[in-house]
Image (cartoon, rainbow, N blue to C red; front, side, top):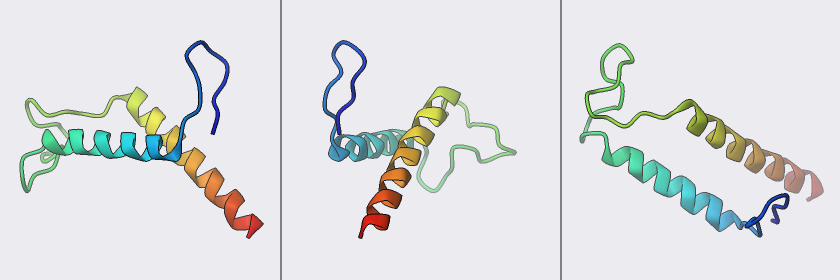
Length: 78
């Protein structure tokens, strides 16, 4: 896949997307104690816990929408 439109932009592989998602997931897991969740009491994050910013949510949604669109295209061409 090729991204264009700005300086320093180039080819981005699926491996890059999935590796980045995995690293992001592992980073979130490291900030949650074993057996716990990031939002244990009434949706409030635990003290010192990592939360997902609105910008991160939008970025994750964009990548998942892209993956879903490609899957639909590949599925319809088979």
